[in-house]
Amino acid sequence: MAVAAGAAKPDIGTVEAFKAALLEAQSVAYTIEGASGMHFAELIERLGIADQVKAKARRQPGGLVGELIARGEAEVAIQQVSELMAVPGIQLVGPIPRELQKITVVSGGVFRNAVSPDAGRALLAFLTSPAARAVMQAKGLEPATP
Image (cartoon, rainbow, N blue to C red; front, side):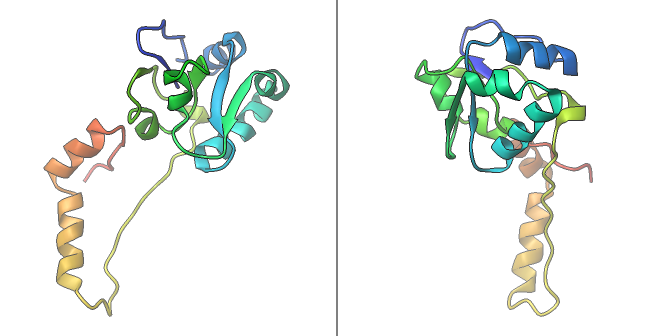
């Protein structure tokens, strides 16, 4: 979740606090398409607050919904942390409670018949290096522990 830079950050540390923050917000931005938007639509259904959130939703097909906050068109935005962190003029409140998250796992490998297997192994070695790990963390991603 994110809010405008300088705005008060709501408590989202528990499922109940997160639910209350969504209900108290004047407007909630999220995408119509994409993994985070589809997950959020399912999540508000599961939490029993879909009608209330949809009534004040600011949705767009895709892209960075944090831009709606930056333009003053929404109070809070829900999207993947890395996508929220890419928008100037907003601040990250934090990830939603872990039990509500849908974790996206990315993995890599080199095919046995790859044309350039050494290049593939070099890329994987770089992506698992401490330097790459630091960049991923700075951009809001959680690299797996080696």
